[in-house]
Length: 328
Image (cartoon, rainbow, N blue to C red; front, top):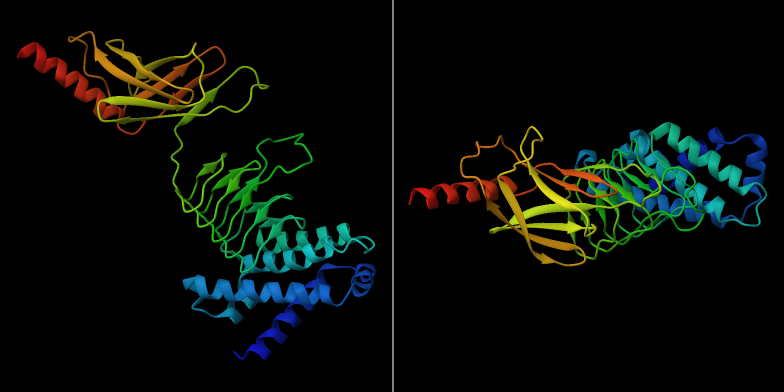
């Protein structure tokens, strides 16, 4: 499709969507805006559409098909106009009109993008149903998001009014179902795998893959969010995260029963890192049921880490070593 024809088609689609979304009074207000408003939105949407066609193999490179039939692109198209309206501070009723446009995009696509969010050039929202992009989000250039993503605040209700949503750098890819929560910074050239939950900054050129291991229990809801993870490396168990000196660690079998024959001797204790040596004090204890889990218990929480990487193999090695020592 020739570029001029394509631009005219996109412009016609843009006007058609706007006229269907707004009432006559809103259209009158919109027509009073500077002509550059719609032209800027049109140029940005054209770059988004070309990026979508070039990066999504299912579209076979057909920008006309995406424009005519892809619901997720409708959310981006409406956002581009809504964001320009939101920034027209001299315009009467700008916030209401911007929200109406964004809401129509949400109804047509299932993706909610706040008109105040800042999104850079060549943005692709692929299969965007269930995606939420919050008010204070900042997204760089050439970013690619799949469906079911939340770029949201770290709390639920009563969040503060300042910067509370993530900032994504350039060339960031986010897999389906991922959650990026709070005013964290995601660097350039970052890949976040599906279903990840991100609550801390991610540096440039990073591949993030997170497996959900945590079952957090606490009585006092006023206590801040705390995270802990564990893995085994070589002959040591490592626990990383936030914990206090009063917390104790236990190994549980697959039925959540404590392995009383094992003791954990702390060999390294740093601010966010503990290292343990495992010892078997009862050679006649029955073989545990696998996979094994780890329990961290303290005054303010009770955390179960489900099948931490390497823990089962480490415990098997400790138990086998004890049997060989006794027999040999």
